[in-house]
Picture 1 (spheres, helix red, strand yellow):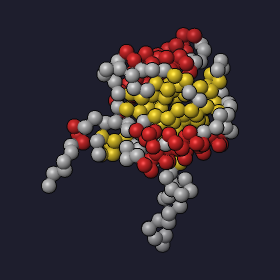
Picture 2 (cartoon, rainbow, N blue to C red):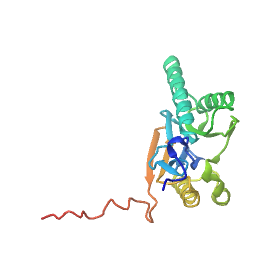
Picture 3 (cartoon, rainbow, N blue to C red):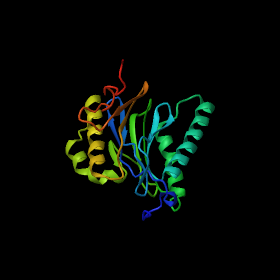
Picture 4 (cartoon, rainbow, N blue to C red):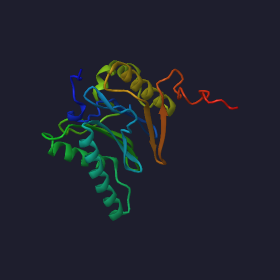
Length: 224
């Protein structure tokens, strides 16, 4: 009996949950790690937190091919800009580049982007570029298919100017809730903390403790 779907003909999508929150001193970004192709999970450990510059990252949702291509183009453009000016690119400049491509090719692209980072002019910033290419700055924003399940959670628990660890916990729990309810979100929770010193990455597994369930599992191979 043949399955009623053919994942080889289904576009690869980052049906996903992405999130970014500003705090005093920087931003916290988070995402799940599932990439799906229809009903088939193409990759369960995708990294959707994509580097643009050392202090600017984007979170990608939509078509994996579209979002990867745009991120590569913007990263190249800003790297050239930094080399020519000997100055770090601003977060708003990165967001504006994404907006230009997402809006200009809005009929062809399936891309929802969150741009977040830190610069000397405005500190930590979060910009949302949803489908269609609109650009808005938000202190807290969510995106992807899993975001529809956590609007109530975010509205209830978000507080402006949260401490760093409170912000990390908030983002982690929000993405975990989305993973639980959304079939297109899954895998692990990837967190990035962007400050004036760059990015610190963390990873949380979907276990009760948040640690890998297999990290301390005894080997089945006898030690004798």
